[in-house]
Image (cartoon, rainbow, N blue to C red; front, side):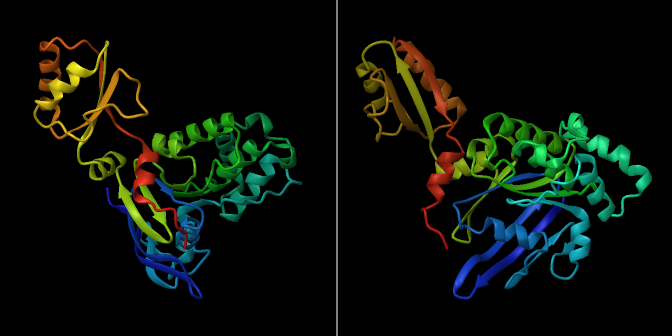
Length: 317
């Protein structure tokens, strides 16, 4: 599939402050991109430019082939935007709220009732259809706001901190909802500070810091680039000395972690390994043949927090 979001050399300045610095980023159709970074990194600025709410100082961006600068109306027809701080009309009922926005997108009145029922079913708010918006919990309001972004069936969803401020149960419900939208084929570009949840549902990660893109791509590939060697952890029964001696003579085993680290149990050893899967299999077979009582033998895969901490420096623009 081709790219549905294309960003090239995007820059936004506020006087001497550079909020976004020469950002270049492409998102494939159907992808789910987690857009992460410290506060002040430029995430919301990027999203506001993509949604035509803010003009860039320089550079260009397009959504579904439409320029955000030259064709803002066409862009708005293909995107659904959920800002980090959203407003709801609290004197409306839930169904009236969705009906109002559907009318704004010229959805015919004859089809709006069925569409509203479908949207409320998707976000699990059917039972609140006739309730006033002001009586909804924060999590329900956020799900209603997400339903609002779907009234015109957009190709691309741009969501700024969709799980912000939610309790654990509401966050899980929001994550499952995003997963359902992913399965429906929507392209989702969303920011979040909850790194574990980003990694759980996205197909790729973009990390922004001080207005600069510091990493972008499939998370597994990024971890390989950041850690060229594999990290293996072995737990044995009893003394570590026989294991240490065996590893000293093994091929492709790093020498830097020949002794247990302070954060490991006394029966566990972690070390770098430069070989492939077959080499790793041979290593395990060799250790077993030497009579080493291995309880567990595993490769540490790391997580998004590892990647984030390695590529960022904790600076803001």
